[in-house]
Length: 337
Image 1 (cartoon, one colour):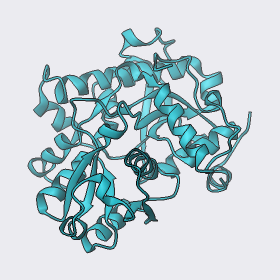
Image 2 (image 1 turned 120 degrees about the horizontal axis):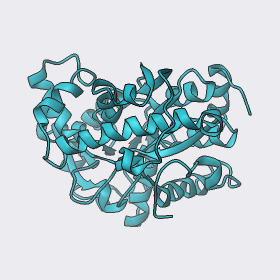
Image 3 (image 1 turned 45 degrees about the vertical axis):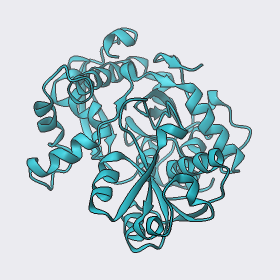
């Protein structure tokens, strides 16, 4: 088994159940673990599981480590500094899996018909110039964080469906993309609803399509861990997934299904998300950020395979990597297998 520190993991990367839905976990007996997270509504399964004692009930003493981007979180998992996390599939993540450093073990955020999801946007300058639909972005400048990011994947798949070419512009950070969209330096982008909706309401950008229309059932983010944890720490991993899945169930009941108190859930999430805003200003963004988190951490393997195939078709990862290299399907229910 490969052992990596963060520096080595970064070098590799840049070089390239609810309890009913899972097997009964072998309780980890107050095992101390670190969970990587971003301060997004889509990470609420972890926050709810912690706040409501589901991790503790599963025998885990959880400490969160917060990140500002997905790549350093993946590096921290590969190096063993963090035990479990949720992130989108990227070229860097796949490359770390190819090196035997990490495994995807479950599913998290998903596009689902009937639930508001990620949006394709046009800048106001492009919109005023005639870009009213995704097809109108033909030949235009399309913003991504990095080549091989989930933004790149979403833009490419939309362009393929529309039969158009895009000029991809890597801008590294979401903040930089927002600035470039507002100034008209780029013409199109895709982003989660809690960012898309306020931008559209302000008139700075315009919603011109839904990601779900081009990528139905897209497995946006996945639950992942080190290959060592997946192979050698089964009891701890099952315990984590059980606690996480209970948190997801509570989140869905309050934020999507309407069968639990949404105000109480917003209060809980606000401890971690938009903490720099008062509750009354944070609440609309938290609510707008609501998307489906897979019950029981079920993993849509058909979507993951499509993503892997796309990365390979773009020569962003080795064509020799198989789905089994990236995922461990022994922990959760799989969809589309």
